[in-house]
Length: 388
View (cartoon, rainbow, N blue to C red):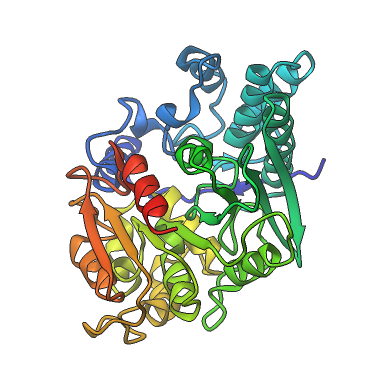
């Protein structure tokens, strides 16, 4: 196994100040919905996303108790050594994998490997963990009687979920942001899958298993283009009935893909980062370092120098590119959905994004934090169904 150590630079301020600033950054980014112990952790604690019917909060907390690999935040290095985040979750997953045969047990192993890989900062150990998470995800879903395949097409990897009992189903291309990987969307996409659509999940460029090339100005849509091309090679789906959803940091790629692909049935921009911090890099120090590191690595930036981000991100902004002129760039039905108090994807940005389509609507679910919760999955599912 390749070993990799990535050390997070901490402020020279006293540790109590560092931790207080860390907590404030997480509050600013996620609103009030953060864990009480968050000030001690570089990574965002996401128990609500990680626990299952058989993998409990107590189980995860038992692993967290073994992590303390730095003098500052408890997880402020990354590598293959005892006490580090990836090592402890990786070995917990390996231990459980020895006896995992049921759907629930295999799913839990996949989840633990996924947590080990998080937030996907491109170390060899994290990549290995994510690949194992994908393997066990497919095994779990197959054991459950689901049709899920891990596919690779022209260097882009994805997970193709097929609905049961549907001939030539429509397809939804489904992409997460800077720290959400292709295995993490199962619960959110369940409604769309059960409605009779195939769903292809994949990572944004520079993230997850699509690490080969960071997002490049002028080539932002490579992953989307490639996955659409792959769909058109299949004879068991309706490649003329394709919708697309993208979240958070994939916002620019999502919207430019939508503009240049008028045959899409619908587009969902979920908490899509399209301007905001892209043209206001002075806001970046207010965000959690995990978030700015992940975002920087997806875009080939120097994560040790936040002041350098703007040199690339300003040009990436949809506003900079002229899309926010109030005139529609497409006629495809568009749903823009977020909270009403997002610091990186503001309500103003959401409304400007909606104006890019002549057939759009904006929905706000929740009043604070980045990305909507509540009944947002149901709203998204219904929108996609209504426009197929």
